[in-house]
Length: 304
Picture 1: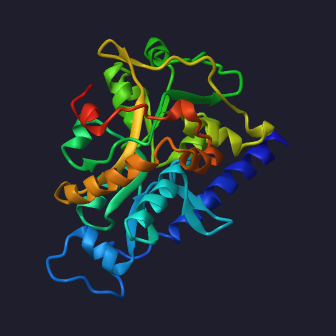
Picture 2: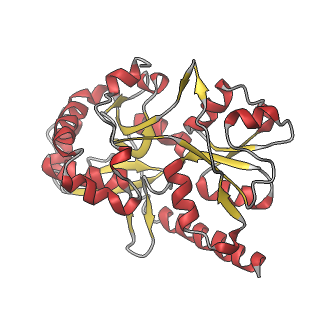
Picture 3: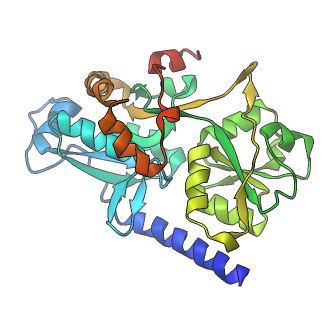
């Protein structure tokens, strides 16, 4: 019975991922539409003229994912973007499903104009894109098999156990954390997305999947008692350069679209922390504890 239930869980999650593919659309630029913008118009001007814009997202709940029942892209990052962009005169958001590791290249190639995927702001990424200020701050967690057979409660525990395999999603910050904590490369298993990572832990290809606490909470909410998985508790965030890490997620724009990012930021500042914002993100598992509490993209880009 446990095997059957596990298969149903993986199948359901896989179907959700496949459904997301139907929203990816073509590779036209995000500002394309019925209203042709003037030659040389900025990305923001073109999007306003078209009345819509494309956002790149990876299929990672609760930040950005396809709701197969509603047949639309949703999540904390997507829904906040809808509110902010509407206030800026852009009423329609189209999602472009992209593997997480390809989000920045896709943005630079103009497959879409904004990354809305809960992407952490890091100094390295700041050299490639222009970030908005963060919408949340969150710690880490491990997804493990029931009973946590290898007793993994931190990245450091993986280092101590040469038989332990740590799963990470390609391009995600967890791979960087693992490297800085000196998890041997041979102990790291890279998956294309969270669904694959969950399946990998179930199949024994990885002993733990490292992700944000919110991602792990969401995955656990989608599995039943027979999934054979649990959240590793207690858990200690990795300590890097003498400090415990906390990730801050934000929107990313092309570096040449800094004026767009600044305009977006101005509206975002009016929204984050309001009652309307808290009500909007609560269904995705966000609480006041995840508010960015004044942390800015400039501080994060400077490594502070």
